[in-house]
Each structure stands twice: as structure tokens, then as C-alpha cells.
Length: 256
Image (cartoon, rainbow, N blue to C red; front, side, top):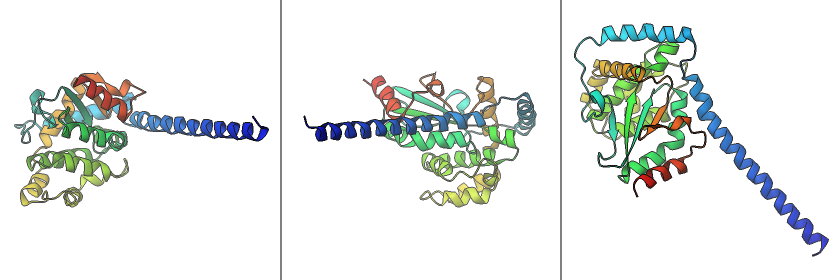
């Protein structure tokens, strides 16, 4: 083999090695984004826990009346909004906060895979809304957005509106979702959602007590950060090797 050919092969190998390193680095950054952002949403300090506990006390007072669940709610105490058939062999339980940046990161990375699997009838996703960021940073955007999402469930538009809320999520410190007008404006991105019935549901806070009860269930189950995502009871957030492809394979294996 000529020296020129050997040099060409070495150069090709070097380029391949560099490309592989770039891919590894990109994957590491992706995982770090999810894990790192999740830390923002974890109750770590006693002071923060105290604030949340205080807020929880206030919420329990607000929710002393009857708790109304949105149409089609399921799971324990009807606190989950299901997407996908009840006959699916795998269930993905998702605890999310519409103000949480780590939840947006999770959704941005896994949304298309989850939607594909639910549409194929292989997965049932059960979404629970919590108000963790309202407690951490004060405000009411988590609660208001959660209520609006529950209102969209009554219209049969939950999945699409859920996705719109995460796609348009404001910065964590910006409590933009505290505005019902903003939430109704975003509903315009979902065909047929901005009816008078939906607007009234949003403005009346019809499901505020239900959202508050969902957050209490989140705490009672010992969860401390969002997103908390479980596949058939297994916490996926503890898996540092999780990717959309791996999630899809886990679900498809369960369906064999």
C-alpha cells in the first residue's frame, strides 16, 4: 500500500473518530440538559420545602369544597388524564408542571415518541399536573395552566393543548401562564378549542381544586421533582441511558 493511501485511510479514521466523539458529546449534553434542569425542579432545601408546605396548606383550604374531575379522568381518585387506549400493555405515568423547564426538556425530547406509541395503541400515557414551581417561585401559572389543560380535556383536545403549552412555555421565572387571557390565546393554536365553554372553564377555575388534589397526591407518593416519569411503575428518571429509541424499544418489547 502506498504512503498516500495509508495517509488517506488514517485521515478517514481520524474524521470518523472525531465524528463519534461529537455524537457522544451531543448525547451527553442532551442527558445533562434533562438531568440538570430536573435539579431546578427538585425540592432540595428545607426552606423551599417550607414554602411548599405552606402553600399546600393554603391550597387545602381552597379545595375544601367538592373536587370535580375533567371528563374521562382516570387512575386513583380520577387524578390522571389518559392518552391512549386502556388496553395498551404499557402505561407511562407522567407527573408534570407546565412551568417546569425540565418538563419542557422531557417533552421536547420524547413527545413524538410518546405520541407515536399512544397512537399505535401500544402505550397508555397518564398525565398528572402539579404546581411545584408555583410553590418554589410563587405565582399561579402552574395552577392556571393545569386548570386550562383540564378544561381542554373536556373538549377532547387535551393532548394537542398539552403540547402547545410546553412548546410555548415562558421562562421559569416569568409567571406568564398566570394570565387566563394568555392561556386562551394559546388555545387558538388548537383547532376548535376556543369555545365559550372552554373560556368559561378557564376563567372560572373549574378544576383548580382537582389540580391541588393532584399535587397533594404527588407529595403523598413521595415524589419530589418534576418531571417524574414511570413506565409500568419503574422510574425512568433514574435511567441515565434513557433515549427516545430506548423508551420505544421498552414499550414494544412489552407488547410482544
